[in-house]
Length: 198
Image (spheres, one colour):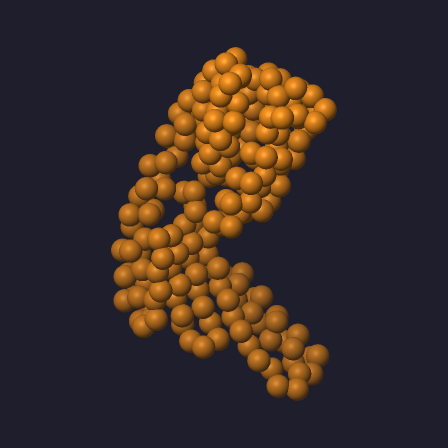
């Protein structure tokens, strides 16, 4: 039996990218769109024919999915899905040729946005140094795509680069001994008010 496009190819790749930081909302939207296309074009191996995938890959819905992923900065997900599909369906000549054309189209659409991501990744070390000096922060931890600034024992700032976008996360821990609801609400309101200026 052939591998199912959505369940055997798309879902595992989406799950992998979610672990790498792809927004869950984007992954859910991709699943939803492909699920709808599967119902329309009947390319599920369970109640259709995988050969019908070629009609989806030549459709307006597929172009819309590529545009959505490009705007979300997540086209790489689709490239990997199509690479896997090309291998999984290599014996179906018609379908393989269509997947190769779709892959070419997707890669071309990525070329336009990939330059931005490369610039961000190259300058992440530079950004870490600037933040360290400018904010006088001694504890700066870096990975390939993330800078963690530990400001004090209660405050941490994380700058993460993913698919040409920068995500800024602020973690503030505050322990309130024997909290009174009124005091707790005041502290929460103060933090919410400060975040409005970020």
